[in-house]
Figure 1 (cartoon, one colour):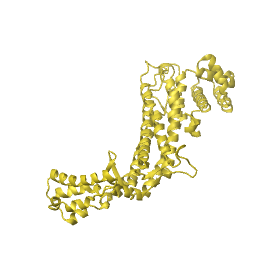
Figure 2 (cartoon, rainbow, N blue to C red):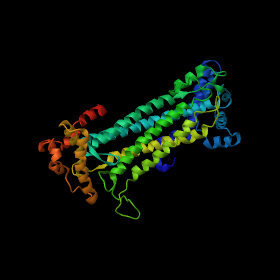
Figure 3 (tube, helix red, strand yellow):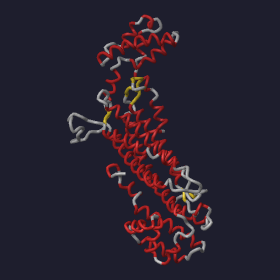
Length: 440
């Protein structure tokens, strides 16, 4: 988590100030519940809120205490006692450190999820706008990196929209799963604190109670949360990789916006490199890097250990901050993406009409040829085009011309039959159907 790849609002969620404020609210809400139960004086609960709300927690002082106590929660409680005074003896009644730490982490992860969901909404808007813009911009579809059949650039963007809409649904579910509260005391039995306290704190913080907390919130919840972030990161990389391929000099059907005064290379002044999408590819690796440790955190010893703690102190901030930045960066790329329809058509035409080979194959079978013979007839003409393309980089042989001159093909198909199969509109006739499925 470095400033270069961070945005302030997400960074603030993981700041010591926000963390200690959440810790205080957990403790203060618990005091309210304890006061209602008659465990502590109501006046004490009121004092704790008043003095805590008015205070600015001294992070340097908390760190100083922790250097001696070697315990972060005790260091905070000691500092809080300095602020509150004698009534501080009623704070943390029947609670254990994990009650504070785990519930706080739940709050922070839900706060982070809310920002990420807002990021996804902005990205979805960009995909939708550009998809509508290029709904009928015809380009070649590729399988194995090789020309296949025509698609539209709008369909590529609609695919991305649908993918990130699924990402949003998964994140909503992951947010709900992680938004749990544990105030159950040592080993989670509520022996020294009433379950009503947990219910009160959960409601106050917008969380659900954890059914069985065993002193810690079960880490399968966290594993699912970070796995969801990993899937979102993979979707970012898929789109970034597509753009990088489309920007290659030999393709150049789309490219990142290149601003006035921008430089592509320190050595070669002509360069316009896909630096943003390459950067996104790298950042997504960092997000996915957290998934395996989060999975390994599930297997804690008995009712608890702290092997998960150091992991989460790092992957919590790092993954959410990085993903927030990456989503915003991808939105900027899509929003300003330069698209070249003429180049798309030019690339498609370089193979002399081979994109229509399946239509000829099907026409032959429908006219009475066996599929095996039809495939052989189409392929032998297609390979002439391929061979000419390999020599010059452009098809010197025209597929339509070769088919019309092939007597075996003409046994089944008339000239009109063949020419009719070279209509680009045939390949895009269901674009509206797909768009309706995606966008409604």
